[in-house]
Length: 76
Image (cartoon, rainbow, N blue to C red; front, side, top):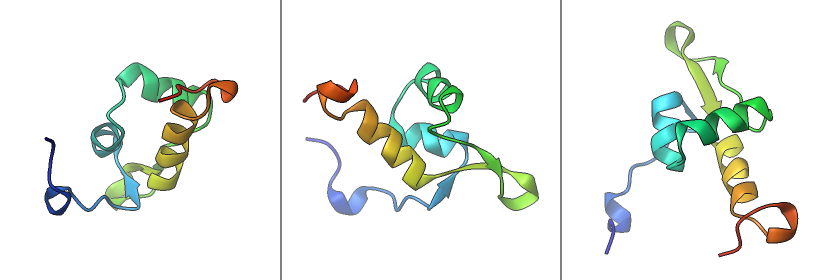
């Protein structure tokens, strides 16, 4: 079930909002919450000033979301 590993995309080190949403799979509301909490910041860094967020920030926000229950995350 799911995609084979070789079929998954190679995600860039920084992503625009559409790629970040696809990468994380979170809702628009969750992404906005991360931005309000300064966990994820979109900065004008890409071609023609495209707003990009670092993949490492997205990974950290996901880890916090799905981390231990003691830290407010969801225990799987």
